[in-house]
Every structure is written in structure tokens, then in C-alpha cells.
Figure 1: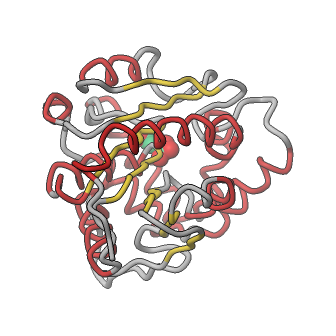
Figure 2: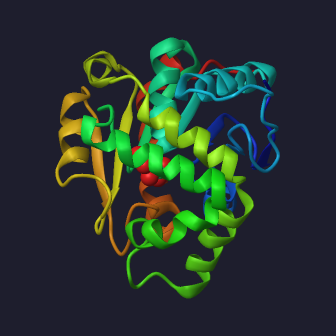
Length: 266
Ligand code: MLT
């Protein structure tokens, strides 16, 4: 399934996979701020915005990864710089496990390779039921303070809430169950060979403390950056600092691995 997306810029592709329960608009600041560096592509994962939901009961994180693979191939864009935010990071891990040839570098934002611990199972199911019944917006009350810091500008808060409004409840329900059932990819970390940047908001409130640094330590040569004045959704809460970290990383990738990972395109 080819996904709908927003894009800006030109050159090698930076593919941005959004988190839960939002859409491609979480990357608005990257579409504008990184377009001088890359062709930035921000797809909607299936079931929201510009991307249809296939007519099946549910889907998996691997299905999302397969959709991204099809999109990369349809655009003849690989190997790409791949960024995944939270659930988008789970998707990025699934993609890199299956098709490492399509990934030139990895940017892992507010995410983890560990699967959900057993005590999350009930919560995921309740989230799915709530979203299905009352819509994605019904998740905002319990989630928004974990995604943004208390000092996030009101405009940013409203942008995130608008995404909650736009994502169909059925889609969020399916995503919640897909996250619950995702594979544990911790063992993949040691086999990642592409340049990797791990990004965490300084005021992250959703991930267990220390999980990003442990993940970075498990990936050979990975660099970790902490984004000040930002929580889980750092790309939208502090886009300037986030973009600067990504830009520095991508410039380093370019310098160190152009020949190996960046085949020249005619
Ligand atoms: C996300 O931001 O994508 C989700 O909060 C991830 C999760 O619930 O595991």
C-alpha cells in the first residue's frame, strides 16, 4: 500500500514516521526546517489523513513498516535517512530489521526496541476500546501531559489536539493493539550498522528514565542528544533544537558515509 505524504526540499530522502495517536503534521517544523538539507517526506501511516485504511480488521507494526517499504520503493528513494518518533520508531525498527538495504541512517526519537511489558496489555486494550468508542480525542485527557511539557506553547498544544481530532478512533484502536502485540527487537540493536542518532526530550515523561541512553549504548557508534525544553513530542515542542541536532547528525553522516550509503543518483 502506497502512503499519502507531505514533502519539501530535494535530494536524498529523509523519511519521517510519526507517533501515536497523531499524523504527518507532527513533522510540520521538520518539513520547513530541514528542507534545505534533504527531500523531506512525512507520510501518514495507514488509516489517517492522506492514507487509506485497508479493509481488514486490524494491522501490525510490521504492516506499517511494509507500507513504508512500498512507499520508498514506489518513490525509488532508498536508501533513506529514516526517522521514527515513538510508535514511528517501532515501525523504523521493523523496517530496518526486514530491509536494512533501504536505510542509510536512523534517527530514533522518544522510542524503544523493547516490547511492552505484560502489565501494559490491559492498558493498551482499554485505550483501543476507548478510542474505538469515543474517538481519538477521548485519549487526550490522559495522554497530552505525557507528550508535551507543562510549558508547551498553547499553539503547539492545539496543533497536537487537532491531530487527535483528525485521526479516526478506529485507527487509534488498531494502532494501540499493534503496539501491544509488537515484537521485542532489543536483539536487533547490536546488529544495526548504519549511523544512528537517539533523541530524547529533556523532560520526557512517557518512557522509563534511562531507556534512551541504554538503547543508544546498545547500538554501535550511536550518538544521543537530549532536546531541551521538550517532552515526548520533541520535534513539535522544540523544532529549532530538534532540527539542529538532526542537521548536525546528517552532516556527519554525509561526511563519513557518503560513498558507502549514498549511491549517487542520476
Ligand atoms: C507514541 O508516542 O507513539 C506512543 O505514545 C508510543 C507508545 O504508546 O508506546
